[in-house]
Image (tube, rainbow, N blue to C red; front, side):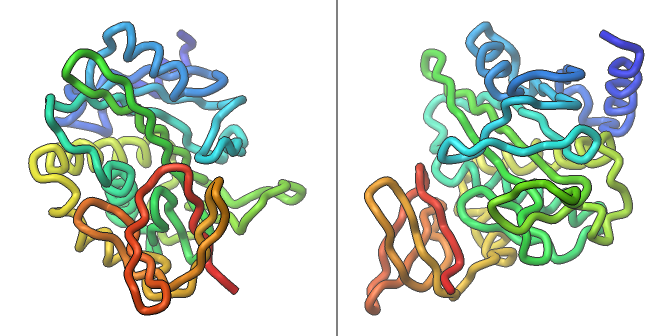
Length: 263
Protein backbone atom coordinates (compact mmCIF):
# COMPACT_ATOMS: atom_id res chain seq x y z
CA UNK A 1 0.00 0.00 0.00
CA UNK A 2 1.41 3.40 -1.01
CA UNK A 3 1.75 6.46 1.19
CA UNK A 4 -1.01 8.09 -0.81
CA UNK A 5 -3.52 5.31 -0.24
CA UNK A 6 -2.60 5.17 3.46
CA UNK A 7 -3.24 8.89 3.77
CA UNK A 8 -6.54 8.75 1.90
CA UNK A 9 -7.83 5.86 4.00
CA UNK A 10 -6.85 7.69 7.20
CA UNK A 11 -8.75 10.75 5.96
CA UNK A 12 -11.76 8.59 5.13
CA UNK A 13 -11.81 7.05 8.60
CA UNK A 14 -11.63 10.50 10.20
CA UNK A 15 -14.36 11.83 7.93
CA UNK A 16 -16.66 8.90 8.75
CA UNK A 17 -16.31 9.58 12.46
CA UNK A 18 -18.52 7.37 14.68
CA UNK A 19 -19.72 5.17 11.78
CA UNK A 20 -16.17 4.30 10.67
CA UNK A 21 -16.35 1.04 12.64
CA UNK A 22 -19.08 -0.19 10.29
CA UNK A 23 -16.78 -0.15 7.28
CA UNK A 24 -13.60 -1.93 6.27
CA UNK A 25 -12.21 0.13 3.40
CA UNK A 26 -9.46 -0.72 0.95
CA UNK A 27 -8.11 1.67 -1.67
CA UNK A 28 -6.40 0.60 -4.91
CA UNK A 29 -4.51 2.86 -7.28
CA UNK A 30 -6.06 1.00 -10.21
CA UNK A 31 -8.12 -2.12 -10.84
CA UNK A 32 -10.32 -3.56 -13.59
CA UNK A 33 -13.58 -3.50 -11.60
CA UNK A 34 -14.17 -2.88 -7.89
CA UNK A 35 -17.37 -4.94 -8.00
CA UNK A 36 -15.70 -7.98 -9.58
CA UNK A 37 -12.94 -7.94 -6.97
CA UNK A 38 -15.40 -7.45 -4.13
CA UNK A 39 -17.59 -10.32 -5.35
CA UNK A 40 -14.50 -12.52 -5.10
CA UNK A 41 -13.86 -11.23 -1.59
CA UNK A 42 -17.50 -11.82 -0.66
CA UNK A 43 -17.15 -15.45 -1.72
CA UNK A 44 -14.04 -15.67 0.46
CA UNK A 45 -15.96 -14.38 3.50
CA UNK A 46 -15.34 -10.62 3.50
CA UNK A 47 -17.45 -8.89 6.16
CA UNK A 48 -20.49 -6.73 5.65
CA UNK A 49 -19.31 -3.17 5.23
CA UNK A 50 -16.27 -4.06 3.14
CA UNK A 51 -15.51 -1.21 0.74
CA UNK A 52 -13.28 -1.32 -2.30
CA UNK A 53 -12.41 2.09 -3.74
CA UNK A 54 -10.26 2.57 -6.84
CA UNK A 55 -8.59 5.76 -7.99
CA UNK A 56 -8.77 4.36 -11.52
CA UNK A 57 -11.05 1.63 -12.85
CA UNK A 58 -10.12 0.18 -16.24
CA UNK A 59 -13.03 -2.20 -16.85
CA UNK A 60 -15.92 -0.77 -14.89
CA UNK A 61 -19.35 -1.83 -16.03
CA UNK A 62 -22.90 -0.59 -15.84
CA UNK A 63 -26.25 -2.14 -16.56
CA UNK A 64 -26.96 -4.00 -19.81
CA UNK A 65 -23.25 -4.67 -20.28
CA UNK A 66 -22.31 -1.03 -20.76
CA UNK A 67 -18.85 0.19 -19.83
CA UNK A 68 -18.58 2.86 -17.14
CA UNK A 69 -16.35 5.62 -18.50
CA UNK A 70 -14.29 7.08 -15.65
CA UNK A 71 -11.34 9.43 -15.88
CA UNK A 72 -8.87 9.37 -12.97
CA UNK A 73 -9.38 12.30 -10.58
CA UNK A 74 -12.73 13.10 -12.24
CA UNK A 75 -14.81 10.19 -10.98
CA UNK A 76 -15.44 8.42 -7.68
CA UNK A 77 -15.77 4.66 -8.20
CA UNK A 78 -16.26 2.19 -5.38
CA UNK A 79 -18.20 -0.89 -4.32
CA UNK A 80 -19.77 -1.76 -0.97
CA UNK A 81 -20.48 -5.26 0.32
CA UNK A 82 -23.61 -5.48 2.46
CA UNK A 83 -24.84 -8.72 4.00
CA UNK A 84 -28.56 -9.04 4.75
CA UNK A 85 -30.31 -11.21 7.31
CA UNK A 86 -31.99 -14.38 5.99
CA UNK A 87 -35.46 -13.67 4.64
CA UNK A 88 -34.81 -10.02 3.78
CA UNK A 89 -36.84 -8.99 0.73
CA UNK A 90 -34.50 -7.22 -1.66
CA UNK A 91 -37.12 -5.77 -4.02
CA UNK A 92 -36.26 -2.12 -4.59
CA UNK A 93 -32.69 -2.37 -3.31
CA UNK A 94 -31.19 -0.43 -6.23
CA UNK A 95 -33.74 2.35 -5.66
CA UNK A 96 -32.92 2.44 -1.95
CA UNK A 97 -29.22 2.75 -2.76
CA UNK A 98 -29.92 5.54 -5.24
CA UNK A 99 -31.95 7.40 -2.65
CA UNK A 100 -29.10 7.11 -0.14
CA UNK A 101 -26.66 8.58 -2.67
CA UNK A 102 -29.04 11.44 -3.52
CA UNK A 103 -29.59 12.31 0.13
CA UNK A 104 -25.84 12.25 0.80
CA UNK A 105 -25.17 14.66 -2.08
CA UNK A 106 -27.99 16.93 -0.92
CA UNK A 107 -26.43 16.89 2.54
CA UNK A 108 -23.25 18.22 0.92
CA UNK A 109 -25.27 21.08 -0.57
CA UNK A 110 -25.93 19.74 -4.09
CA UNK A 111 -29.16 20.94 -5.68
CA UNK A 112 -31.31 19.59 -8.51
CA UNK A 113 -30.45 15.97 -7.73
CA UNK A 114 -32.97 13.54 -9.21
CA UNK A 115 -33.36 9.78 -9.58
CA UNK A 116 -34.17 7.82 -12.74
CA UNK A 117 -35.53 4.32 -12.36
CA UNK A 118 -34.00 1.99 -11.59
CA UNK A 119 -30.47 3.12 -10.73
CA UNK A 120 -29.34 6.46 -12.18
CA UNK A 121 -28.55 9.68 -10.32
CA UNK A 122 -29.19 12.84 -12.31
CA UNK A 123 -28.11 16.45 -11.90
CA UNK A 124 -30.07 19.07 -13.80
CA UNK A 125 -31.40 16.47 -16.24
CA UNK A 126 -28.02 14.85 -16.96
CA UNK A 127 -26.47 11.65 -15.66
CA UNK A 128 -24.32 12.25 -12.60
CA UNK A 129 -23.85 8.67 -11.52
CA UNK A 130 -25.05 5.11 -11.66
CA UNK A 131 -25.46 2.04 -9.49
CA UNK A 132 -25.02 -1.64 -10.32
CA UNK A 133 -26.04 -4.25 -7.75
CA UNK A 134 -24.83 -7.84 -7.93
CA UNK A 135 -25.87 -10.52 -5.45
CA UNK A 136 -23.87 -13.30 -3.81
CA UNK A 137 -25.60 -16.12 -1.96
CA UNK A 138 -23.91 -17.78 1.01
CA UNK A 139 -26.12 -20.26 2.81
CA UNK A 140 -29.32 -18.56 3.93
CA UNK A 141 -27.80 -15.07 3.75
CA UNK A 142 -27.63 -12.85 0.70
CA UNK A 143 -24.81 -10.37 0.18
CA UNK A 144 -25.18 -7.43 -2.18
CA UNK A 145 -22.22 -5.81 -3.88
CA UNK A 146 -23.33 -2.25 -4.57
CA UNK A 147 -21.15 -0.67 -7.24
CA UNK A 148 -21.36 3.12 -7.49
CA UNK A 149 -19.81 5.56 -9.93
CA UNK A 150 -20.15 9.33 -9.50
CA UNK A 151 -18.79 12.02 -11.78
CA UNK A 152 -16.98 14.61 -9.70
CA UNK A 153 -16.17 16.74 -12.76
CA UNK A 154 -18.03 17.22 -16.05
CA UNK A 155 -16.86 15.36 -19.17
CA UNK A 156 -13.73 16.58 -20.86
CA UNK A 157 -13.72 17.88 -24.43
CA UNK A 158 -13.42 14.91 -26.74
CA UNK A 159 -15.07 12.37 -24.41
CA UNK A 160 -17.37 10.13 -26.44
CA UNK A 161 -20.61 9.64 -24.49
CA UNK A 162 -24.00 8.17 -25.34
CA UNK A 163 -26.01 10.59 -23.17
CA UNK A 164 -25.72 14.00 -21.48
CA UNK A 165 -23.43 13.77 -18.45
CA UNK A 166 -22.93 16.10 -15.47
CA UNK A 167 -20.25 16.51 -12.81
CA UNK A 168 -20.77 17.23 -9.12
CA UNK A 169 -18.57 20.32 -9.48
CA UNK A 170 -21.40 21.88 -11.53
CA UNK A 171 -23.75 21.74 -8.54
CA UNK A 172 -23.68 23.84 -5.41
CA UNK A 173 -22.08 21.05 -3.38
CA UNK A 174 -19.72 22.32 -0.71
CA UNK A 175 -17.06 19.77 -1.67
CA UNK A 176 -16.07 17.47 -4.50
CA UNK A 177 -13.19 16.00 -2.49
CA UNK A 178 -13.61 12.26 -3.14
CA UNK A 179 -12.94 11.42 0.52
CA UNK A 180 -15.65 13.80 1.71
CA UNK A 181 -18.12 12.56 -0.90
CA UNK A 182 -17.35 8.89 -0.23
CA UNK A 183 -17.75 9.31 3.53
CA UNK A 184 -21.10 11.07 3.10
CA UNK A 185 -22.39 8.38 0.73
CA UNK A 186 -21.24 5.50 2.95
CA UNK A 187 -22.84 7.00 6.06
CA UNK A 188 -26.08 7.55 4.16
CA UNK A 189 -26.02 4.01 2.77
CA UNK A 190 -25.60 2.53 6.25
CA UNK A 191 -28.66 4.39 7.56
CA UNK A 192 -30.79 3.64 4.50
CA UNK A 193 -29.82 -0.03 4.20
CA UNK A 194 -30.57 -0.61 7.90
CA UNK A 195 -34.04 0.84 7.37
CA UNK A 196 -34.50 -1.11 4.13
CA UNK A 197 -33.60 -4.36 5.87
CA UNK A 198 -36.13 -3.76 8.65
CA UNK A 199 -39.06 -2.37 6.65
CA UNK A 200 -38.40 -2.84 2.94
CA UNK A 201 -38.57 -0.28 0.17
CA UNK A 202 -42.13 0.80 1.07
CA UNK A 203 -40.88 3.05 3.88
CA UNK A 204 -38.51 4.80 1.42
CA UNK A 205 -40.92 5.09 -1.50
CA UNK A 206 -42.20 8.63 -0.81
CA UNK A 207 -38.66 10.01 -0.49
CA UNK A 208 -37.69 8.31 -3.77
CA UNK A 209 -40.82 9.59 -5.51
CA UNK A 210 -40.03 13.16 -4.41
CA UNK A 211 -36.85 12.98 -6.51
CA UNK A 212 -38.28 11.05 -9.47
CA UNK A 213 -36.86 12.58 -12.66
CA UNK A 214 -39.48 11.26 -15.10
CA UNK A 215 -42.69 11.39 -13.07
CA UNK A 216 -45.75 11.66 -15.38
CA UNK A 217 -43.57 12.07 -18.47
CA UNK A 218 -43.82 10.10 -21.73
CA UNK A 219 -41.14 7.41 -21.75
CA UNK A 220 -39.89 4.44 -23.74
CA UNK A 221 -38.87 1.14 -22.18
CA UNK A 222 -36.31 -0.98 -23.99
CA UNK A 223 -35.35 -4.57 -23.22
CA UNK A 224 -34.25 -7.66 -25.12
CA UNK A 225 -37.82 -8.34 -26.25
CA UNK A 226 -38.38 -4.91 -27.78
CA UNK A 227 -39.78 -1.51 -26.83
CA UNK A 228 -42.88 -0.17 -25.07
CA UNK A 229 -44.09 3.41 -24.67
CA UNK A 230 -46.30 5.04 -22.08
CA UNK A 231 -46.50 7.53 -19.24
CA UNK A 232 -44.21 7.06 -16.26
CA UNK A 233 -46.39 6.95 -13.13
CA UNK A 234 -43.75 6.34 -10.50
CA UNK A 235 -42.97 3.20 -8.52
CA UNK A 236 -44.90 0.93 -6.20
CA UNK A 237 -44.03 -0.23 -2.69
CA UNK A 238 -41.62 -2.86 -4.03
CA UNK A 239 -39.82 -0.51 -6.43
CA UNK A 240 -41.48 -1.72 -9.62
CA UNK A 241 -42.08 0.95 -12.26
CA UNK A 242 -45.71 1.81 -13.02
CA UNK A 243 -46.15 2.46 -16.74
CA UNK A 244 -49.49 3.77 -18.00
CA UNK A 245 -50.43 2.38 -21.42
CA UNK A 246 -53.85 2.99 -23.00
CA UNK A 247 -55.27 4.00 -19.63
CA UNK A 248 -54.02 0.88 -17.84
CA UNK A 249 -51.14 0.61 -15.39
CA UNK A 250 -48.49 -1.97 -16.23
CA UNK A 251 -46.06 -3.06 -13.52
CA UNK A 252 -42.47 -3.26 -14.78
CA UNK A 253 -39.89 -5.05 -12.66
CA UNK A 254 -36.22 -4.18 -12.64
CA UNK A 255 -33.63 -6.20 -14.47
CA UNK A 256 -32.22 -5.76 -17.93
CA UNK A 257 -34.53 -2.87 -18.80
CA UNK A 258 -33.64 0.61 -20.01
CA UNK A 259 -35.94 3.59 -19.38
CA UNK A 260 -35.64 6.65 -21.61
CA UNK A 261 -37.46 9.93 -21.96
CA UNK A 262 -39.57 9.90 -25.13
CA UNK A 263 -39.37 12.69 -27.66
